[in-house]
Length: 75
Picture 1 (cartoon, rainbow, N blue to C red):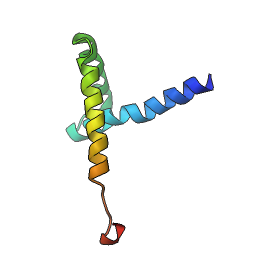
Picture 2: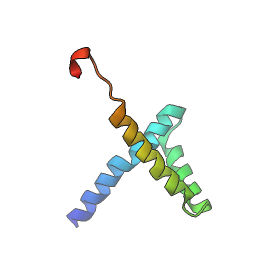
Picture 3: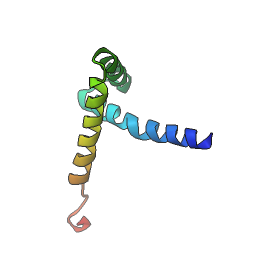
């Protein structure tokens, strides 16, 4: 049972990051973005989920490429 909760915690911690970042960018609540993805997934038979995974992949790559450096000596 612990494995189930560990897996659930991992997906909650990492999965909602996409919705939070989109919401911050748009200036709306993350809850609205999450429910929009849920409705989009049911309405289009999976397109919303595919879009969500694409955005998650995009954000991950962007974070790996563009990192904030506080000074010149952080290279």
